Length: 262
Image (cartoon, one colour):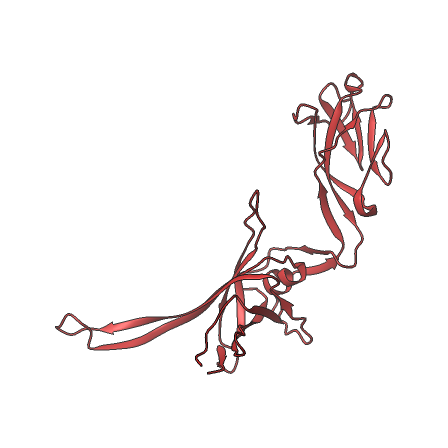
């Protein structure tokens, strides 16, 4: 029976070096979870030698390249960092609250405070978190209020360390406060991107397996550098991040291994 391929299979990236070129002694393989699409292209430049005739008399293979694209629906910060950014990875939540519930501005001292509880003068930060940055306030008409340094008047507010102060004239007005917060976590990941010198990038091996009908196809690209990571969000669909990468030869000159059942 002939061998056929069906579906996207599954792919794993294994970090080989960090962004500074340091070899990773004990790499943690990262699986491209819920893989949607994967393509790998082997491509060469052909050099054609012509004489007096219309068609070439010889064809020589010139420069070659191996490139790939993988669309994986599962968001994995550790994978993005080790295979694409090569930055410093830490545990911890950095998230945003986009308020759609709203809260009325109380009477004196006309203050709403981000904290651990939710009542008439406070609003609760998720995950026992800490307020870190203001992302704007909307009034009951959906209009953006103006942030000022002090003494707010109608339509204005001040904020410091999660304490929002409004004008006395706006008492009773429903406002929608959006903000960034941080919180401790053992699973959430945070990474900082720095301006690396040109040429610096983490490397990894790409390992694609496509089993079907009891037979196997396995492709291993020994060294890869990713050149693009994109997030295309839609209003009524899942976001499927895409990672593009190029393969190159290792120190022994090996670029790829291909294994088939037949």
